[in-house]
Image 1 (cartoon, rainbow, N blue to C red):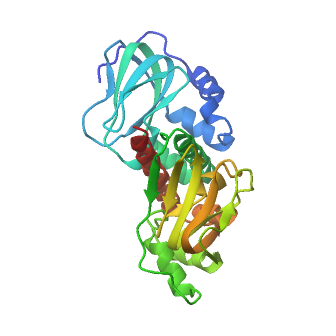
Image 2 (tube, one colour):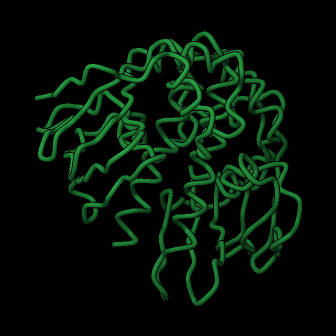
Image 3 (tube, rainbow, N blue to C red):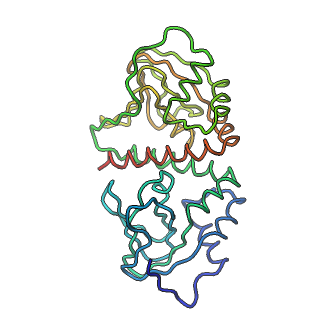
Length: 304
């Protein structure tokens, strides 16, 4: 990276004030701000200078203080990142190949490395919780921008609906095989399995409507759920996928209606229980952030 230094980079106070004014960090836990301020490093870029190029994994997040970056990936057309905006977070969390980020004019930016973010997450769970809320909100925003008539499916087809209630081992197995709930330890899954409840719903049953409280989400064990976005747009949740987690983990209010498409057996996961489990199991929390980031990239690709 070819960086042109200036004789007067922003001092620690200026960096802190900039970060605290960012709308995207509104609500970021105070306990974590100090660490973020200390680890962020400043760069000046001339027009044409790059922050990250090539095929290596994204390893830095860029907060643009002034100027403009042009960010490109293979998933969608390039876009401008202006002052007060952030570039690279989703790719970093998903461990995707790096974005190409090029200054379109003289640009001032703060960079935070993947290692520093990992350290922040390990020391301050409130920062992980904040990022989960943020990524869930971004996924909701991406859903609202899907093209008319599009249908996006998550999860896999199932082989049939189990007739008997699920026992502990079956609940544990359903949680353990879902790509939405990666776990680093059996203890984390077992804790969830002990506290989730089972729901069985018939075809055409309404699960929730826009405006309903969103204090839980569902892991589909069998069947499928249709979530209607409006304008003929919908996405389907099938075996192994979760339904309603974006709203439960961000706004707390249902944005879309959900109806059972094929008879469903699902595990109900309460939001507060889920966050408590993540707080006790840091590896699972970090992996879940990566899952949300991957889903956001999938939605971005569906938007075209």
